[in-house]
Length: 143
Image: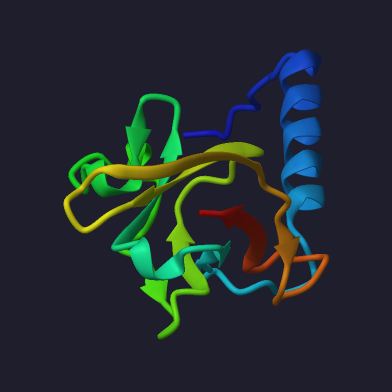
């Protein structure tokens, strides 16, 4: 059996060459970690902090205490917030980066003490400009 030359149309060669070049140029020579990172929202509280039993972050029609862990696309926060002993700072690990949300302060009986719309400005606090990294936003409310 003799070898037989395969003729490939020039457009196929061009398409393969350009996709290969794109694939190679998309690969970075700078190593970035493949591990994920967590971002946080810190809520600084002024006023009657002792009245607050819990804080929630709310987006549209849902709040962080309503998070359905079976649907990660709808998560607002990763679990309940951590709270400073004096109630002055509450820290949420967040799943969503939103420009605006509502901070809801709740009393021990579950009643809403205050709902405060806030603008959220995330700043990178780790990692690098090239690879990204964890971000933090600080918002303030008065109860």
